[in-house]
Structure formats: C-alpha cells, structure tokens
Image 1 (cartoon, rainbow, N blue to C red):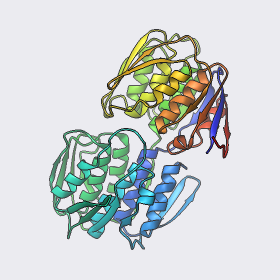
Image 2 (tube, helix red, strand yellow):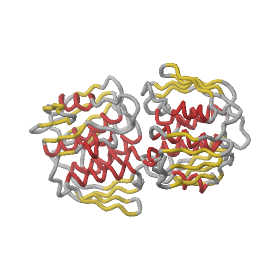
Image 3 (cartoon, rainbow, N blue to C red):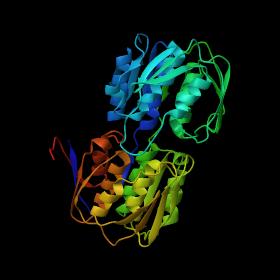
Image 4 (cartoon, rainbow, N blue to C red):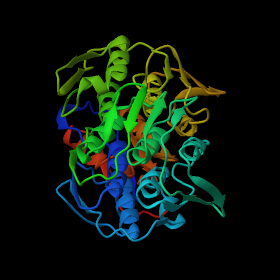
Length: 421
C-alpha cells in the first residue's frame, strides 16, 4: 500500500487545471447501458473508482477504451445483467447499474454496495422508487434481484434529497412507459451533467437543475457523447490547500457556480477569492483567517464531501468553530488522526467543535476514507516537520494524481509505493 511523505510549511503558489468529476463520471459511465452503440465520455479522470466501474461494465459485456481521459464505451454486446459482489463491494456507486439494466433488459441482479467504511448509506430510496415503477424486487443473500416487463411511470417523492437515488431513478425512468415525476430531486451539478447526457441520447427530461424532474419515457435511446464536468470537490480541496498554507493559487476549468458555497465561506473567513466564468483565484498570503461555522446540506449548500477539509483548515484558525454534518451523522473518522497532528477537536453527536491551535506538528496518520484522506494531506501541508499519510489508496479513489498537482504548486509531497505497514 502506498503512502505520502509530506514536509509541511510551504505556501502553495501557481496555476492548475481541475480534473473531471468522479461522481459525475460514475453515473455517466453507467448510463451507457441504456443504449446500444458507441458512446464517448471526455474529461474522464483516471481514478480507482472509474477503473472499478469500467471493470463492472466489462463484466456486463461492454467493450471500452480509455485514452487521454477519453472513454469510449461499446454497449452493443451487453449479455449479462449480473453485477457481482467482488466488484460492487469496492464502491457504493456501483448501484448505478441497477436502474439502467432493469430499464433496458427487464432484469438485474446487483450486489448490495460497498465503498467507504463510514456511516449507513441505505439504498432503500432506490428500491422503493423502482417498486413504485412496477418492478418486482427482492433482496436475497446480499443481492438486489429486480424484474419487470417494462417499468411504468410513477410519482416519486423523496423525503430526503439523494444524489444516488435521483441518478438511478432518473436513468430508470427514461425508458419507462409514461411520464415520471421526481420530487425533491437532487440538484447537484453531477445530476445535471447526467440529465444532459440522457437528453443527448434522446431522453425527454424537463426541470433539469431544479428539485422537480419530469421524465417522459421513450421506447429506446441512441448512443451519444458528453464531457464530464470539472470536479468541484477536487477544486474545493485545492482552494483549502492554498488557504491552509497561506498561498496563492488559480484554478482553471472550474465554474464558480458549482463552488459558490465553498468560495463564500472562504471569503467570509477572510481569504481573497476572485472568480471568472471558468476560473477561481485564492490569495491567502496575507490573510488572518477567522473561524466560520458550517452546516453541510445538499447542493447548493456546503457539501458534506468538503466537511473534513474544512475541519482541517479551521484547526489552524484562531478561535472556535463548529462543523455540523446534517447529511451523514458519523462522518468524523478523520478527527482522531487530525488530533494526532496537534489539532484540538472534539466530537459531540454530529458536530465537530474545533479549537484552533497555533501550529500542527508532523506525525504518522492513517486514512480511513476518501475525504478523510484529503483532510490529512491538507493538515500535513500546514504542519511543521514530516507527516506520513498511510493508506492513500482511499485518496486514489477520488483524486487524480493529487500529489502531482500539489507538487506542481510547490508542495513537498512524495508518494512512496508499495509500503508495508
């Protein structure tokens, strides 16, 4: 297993382009199962999760090539509707194949998903929605088994906004009979990216980007191309890397509208952040940041996937900050590791109370999930001395060559391959 060695204390400076979004890519790849032909998805990041999804599509019978961040999927020869545990256990987003397989083939057997080791993230919204659309679903021996002659339109009302369920049921409904309405649909940019891709295939969708999606089912879809949107979580992570090191960084290929909540909080904290239609520049060189409380919420609110990174930044900000995660109540596995670096953080229910310290000190820490890994890297960039971040395979699930990007901005960070510990 690889690890990172980080010598902290260097202010990041420079300009960098943001990679394609992991969470968008996984849904776009699954959507290719809805048609028969050659589909091209550009700006696809090279990530472990993307590799897992491609292996899963190959298991189902798709052919693919992946060159220069362009994935070409041949969905003509899909001959299998079985998604095995061995692949699905590696990431929760594998559940995205359930809706497309059921909609196009009338049958799917998909393992209950795995992925990050924190918190209950149930798939009941996916299952209940498909049942409302007329599917017969059972859960047997860890597998979801779904059957239908053809999915039927339904009104789907979510008690909570769910990105995964919105994406899965959106893909299922485009081939259903009649007009489906999804109320309280997720409004995340990744869902918009997916909906536009489905439109490119010939789907009839209205309300894109709003909490009410209306989908008029069609008999079939055709192959199409799409560009993956920039990764707003990677962008936010690098912005905080600049802030925590008192650096000056410009991000290219990223729309501010996708990061408005993060940019606003950085500005409230005292960072100088300027935006254009496709770039964000942060200058924290001469800033004395102040504590800013956050409560995570669905888009356009502050994303739960940035909670850990914000805690890392607030740990070296003078004063006391409260971070509340309203999406996942126990997503704080990074806190004990940040405390090993000298942070002063206490957890009370779904709140982190952070008392800022004058400095962090390098230590050996261990990643426990994707975004926890990012928070430890950020803390290591600010800490005095050397920080070892173990188990960075978690980070590789969602960040494309993050250490190379940070190195290009001046960070002293090295990947050590194949380390045993």
